[in-house]
Length: 173
Image 1 (cartoon, rainbow, N blue to C red):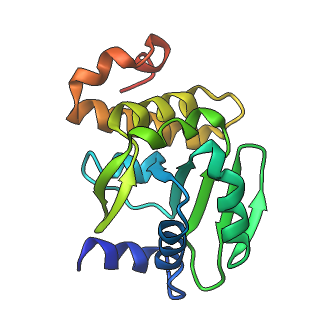
Image 2: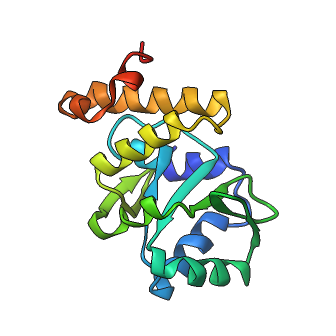
């Protein structure tokens, strides 16, 4: 089974939610890039997730929220805008923290489980994972996943080790 078909099967995306979100964003001029676990997958062996985390250029965030809100269910949370659709278990999360908006400008197209998408550069993906792992308000299980993603990145790209703070390095196995 191809990676994209597998991802759509795992996320039970019978409604074509993934294709519709990407198509709407691509056709709108909204500048965005993939961050989070799916971005990690673009640089190392993939792990399947139900989430697709996106950073949107700060100036385009309200446009993206409005655009997606006309087609899907949109919920605003303190650090994200979550987009969903009946018929799909895929969870698209637009990060609202302005630090992530800066990642869009240096993103490049990469393969993400069979899709060519703009992905934040590896240093930015790592930085986002460090921020997430250091966030005391984040659920412990999510922080553990962030640490695992950092470890995966460092195993494949040991030259990035100097970018990881000691408090994170000491928590890696």
